[in-house]
Image (tube, rainbow, N blue to C red; front, side, top):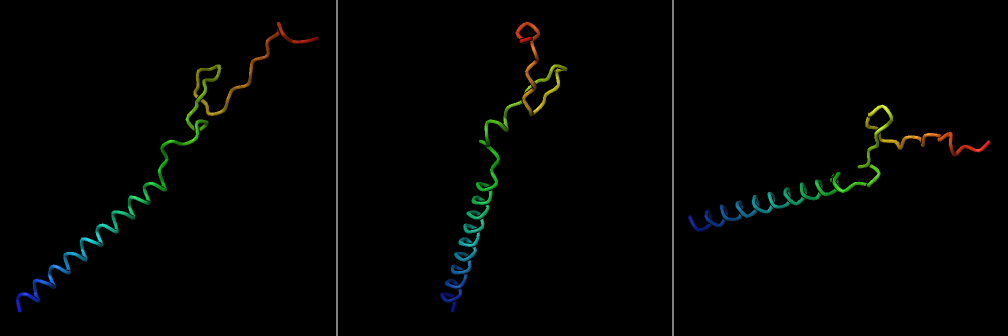
Length: 70
């Protein structure tokens, strides 16, 4: 009687272990899919405008009066 009970307990432990392993693998896969690290270089670049504010867009080139054509 006790040997069948031991088998049952072992089987239950093994099932729980497999379930935990499966859940861990799913969480790992989800983290990899939602990973934001290593994005585009353009997402990481910031510019400073003439007032010293940090902006995402490249500021316009200032027009130089010396090089303008008439």
